[in-house]
Length: 156
Image (cartoon, rainbow, N blue to C red; front, top):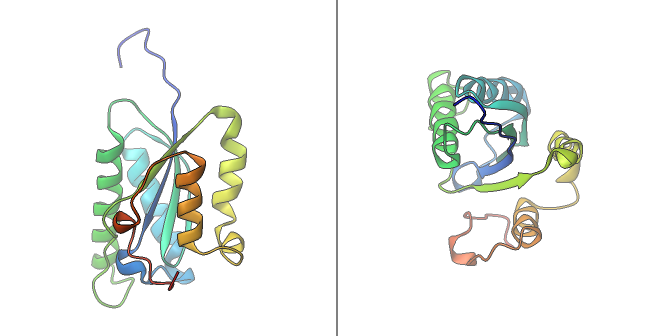
């Protein structure tokens, strides 16, 4: 960055396993999420928290301005898929579903978002991923067409 340039951008990413398959079993989650955190750090972003449940992930980062959101998500999804497949952490071929959600926050909101991401398992006992994702879109006042949302398999 150039001298005199100061940035503070916090971004949450949300994306699903392809076809919303529940492939991120508890016994591999910490390894996969740690790997994803390492990708984020290598890209010069600040990895704040990476967590999720069997069918999707949430990531909160301090975004470095040198890399776009789309390039960041692409790198995380690509590298983590390659890692999961190379290490044979899942039966068959693992892939992330196309698309993602990206939501920005101010510094004063970080504790709330951090706790929300850490408590994903507890949160999803009350709300499906579909409900959660649509709530994000509504809360951030994003227009969407349901035809282009993730392929939700929960029958809703």
